[in-house]
Image (cartoon, rainbow, N blue to C red; front, side, top):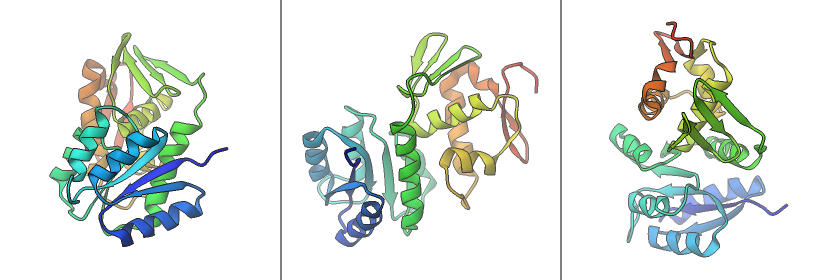
Length: 228
């Protein structure tokens, strides 16, 4: 089986080498770019990149613009790296369709865990994996969601979150349990990460968003019965 290709985009060569070394140990093929323009050249030339790790602050073309350009053509998973820890930046990243957002400095092991979680989901799902619940159809193979027959656009993490809810209907799920299953690593950060995703997911689901009930002080429950 061919190795999955990951494009690492950062103007700091030491950072690229650090990330590359950890990914190569996990048998990934790693391509490098020092700025957004070089990243776009590589991305469109290769055509088979499985995931992009993208820094924000770079010369020639920053990460935001690079993400916009890529999202105009592809839904390839994107993990955004930034030296700034700003909630506004994080929200902007999700608006642009960023799948993960990591602030520097970070643990390379955590980064690799996130990479593996995303690629495991996108690479190993069978075509028969379709979930239908309450007028929502989730096609795990195609990574598509339809509500009453109409397709909707979800980010990678929104899709994973909805799938987890739909696979666990009527069950009270703590934030910790959701994070450990959807993010697939031990999460010690701010619970606002999951709350932000739930808010956006509810909005995109429209009236079906009411299926996601808040359990105050604990987490959430996916309930199509209408009961609180």
